[in-house]
Image (cartoon, rainbow, N blue to C red; front, side):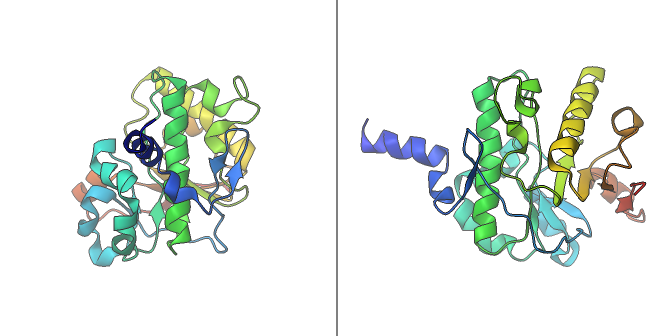
Length: 235
């Protein structure tokens, strides 16, 4: 293999970002350390419009089309100082299309953790975004570990996004199934939710942890007077 091709493969998977990482599970997913203190974001702003955040007071999130945050996947190092202007970030929400090959789903889980580990190593406050694909990613059907949850410590804070992910009855059921597995596996103290929390998905689960709901940016800007942080937990 030529040096040019080798470097392209290595950096496509951002190997340089995980030189100091610990790895989790058979697939060696990079680990993101749980923060010493749990910080609840005042709000969330998508990466591509982060300058709209008033006084940069929001956590930067990536709940938008992947193409809008592609640069941070390929040139992560260039954004460290820029992101340090904000109180923290949610790790990239790389798409895990259920109809995509399993290797694509696994790669996007890996990239989520690799970016998160690197930014954390540079001093940013990082909250892991948890995203699952089909059942093979959040059960032990294919692997001994539930891959979608590797690299994330238990009993801490995580974030999930429903925005654009729960349009059909099938996608709602898949989301609920993965959410239950995540709660069982990680036992998080806090779960941030970007987007709506329909009862069809969350019924019977609100007493499992402290859920905090954030409206998507479009909803938030259409309703500037609305309270944009809601604690929907029964705990």
